[in-house]
Image 1 (spheres, rainbow, N blue to C red):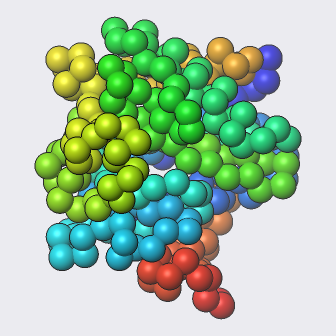
Image 2 (image 1 turned 90 degrees about the horizontal axis):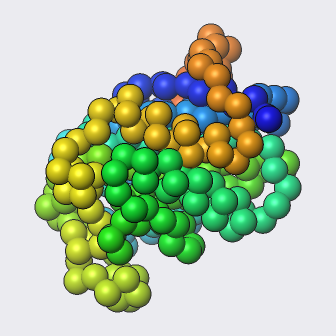
Amino acid sequence: MTPLRVIDTGLRGARANMAFGATLAAGRRRGPPDTLRFFRFPPAVLIGRHQSLAAEIDLSRIDGVELARRPTGGGAVYVDDRQICWELVMAGDVPLSETTARVCGAVAAGLSGLGMVARFRPGNDIETGGRKICGTAGLVDGAVQLLHGTLLLDADLDRMAEILTPAADKLARHHAVGVAGRVTTLRHVLGRVPSFAEAMAAVTRGVAGLGFAPFTGEVSAAEEDEAARRLAGPLGRDAFTWTGEMDAD
């Protein structure tokens, strides 16, 4: 069994969360253990690494919403503090698509223990009843892989639909009329909102099925310092969020 540090970094700003994920990836390049992180956001839109901000969101409707660009690919997502995100950072040398399928399948199995039938849908979603409850995205950085996902415990789907403007062909592939027709929440599926602790336990159980031995870990002062430095650098600046280009320090 491979040791897996499990940490909860709580509620942080969107760019601060992206900086912390980058810190974990850099730390894993220096050596073990692998890490499963849970984290949350205030209202924010996270766009994929190579997306156009103006093409993915309605900029006239983003008052009070933080914007951040992920280092991972995939589509834009709207998040708030009622959802919980997970991030698995581990050593790996297989294609990212294989890692995504294995990890999402394991997380789906863990979530099914909450009282629903969840499954992985290629390329990067976890669904129940044909609607998405968790979208994921990942990256490969040398011998390190990072995969993160947003679990919809509860959400303001109307607000999400106002802000996000996905291409019509993307919705058509899922036979959805709009954003709200493509996604659902655990509140809707289960008739209740699982606690953060319950959701974290379900995801952790699922990931453990891949051969990990989870243990409760702590965030080090060195990690916090490095994350702060990354947030103060190009990753946290408007230039990267708006254009995807890293300006110089």
